Length: 244
Image (cartoon, rainbow, N blue to C red; front, top):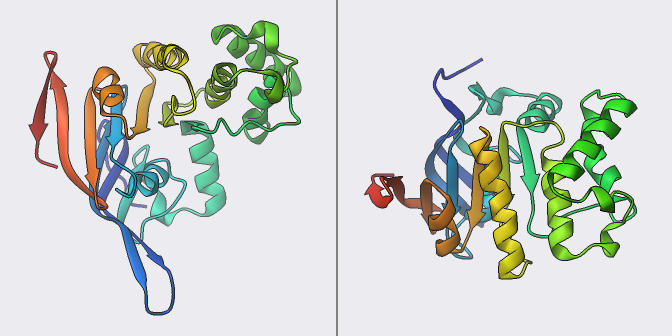
């Protein structure tokens, strides 16, 4: 199995993703993407609607496979894995936070957080203890038994953050995590992500908001028409452009 030995937790190498719309029509949503996400970094994938951002997110998060090129997750080329193997690696390595929260409506906050652990062989006792710990971490231990419709948007997003951390992943992939929140609540959510990054978690922020990306990330991939147009790195507090 093809491996790469380096400090990258995720690497896209000359990746293209093509969707077949009909017998005669194909659409290349992403073409020739090269993206390196190093362990412990805070990376943003930035681009307007239609830039290929969502497709890139799915590829970076190992939710989809490439039509061309290679995707490495924890130095393993996922193109050669069975879906069951990929699901296990993805479930352990990556925690997902979505703009729409994606909480299960008939599960309480605590039960939503416990859910990812059921697929990773945790005992019931371990799942409950971990969920209680995470609820306290995101300052919602008094909302454990509340259902999503009994929580504010900001509280739901914090439950989603706790759920993303349930299996102690190395990477947190946040897709427009402040998109459905007011600015004050959004800042609190980003503060949580920055704190987790300081503790060693790798953060991947997918956003169309340039201010959000430049305020929090240390490396930004700028997408346009399905390609990485440029890469910027924060060096000594200033952004410098590098070749993609």
